[in-house]
Image (cartoon, rainbow, N blue to C red; front, side, top):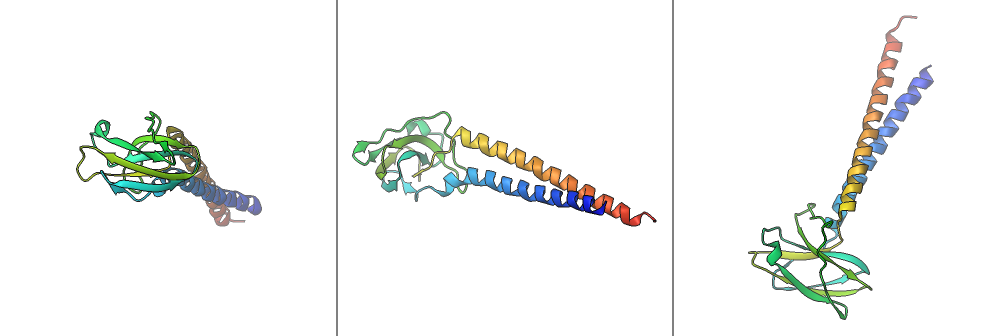
Length: 171
């Protein structure tokens, strides 16, 4: 009987560890785009960044004037056209950035971008796109991981209580 209780306790601690790993994965999904942005540049200056093929986003200093901010530039030999996206999300980690739009680089190359607007001391940057799908995946992973961790805590606690009761019961 002791081996069975010990197995339940071990299973509980394994579930706790898996839950923690899952929650760290959810945090990584949310923080990775913010940690992968280019160095910010002040409005009116030129930002030159080498990008890989695929979707990239332009992020600007948070303000209420987002509709007055304009960004122009080039991706390789093509003119950069920002796509407004209703599912693109703002970045919050490690700093807060408002999503200004996204663009598709058909091939790896250099992006030259300039943003301007009525916001004082504003900056802009380029980084990966954080979409609503990323938020949904991180939320679901976080909730599932929390449930696994809580189940593991309950199993470990249950095994501990039954082990303690078995020791205190006279034979």
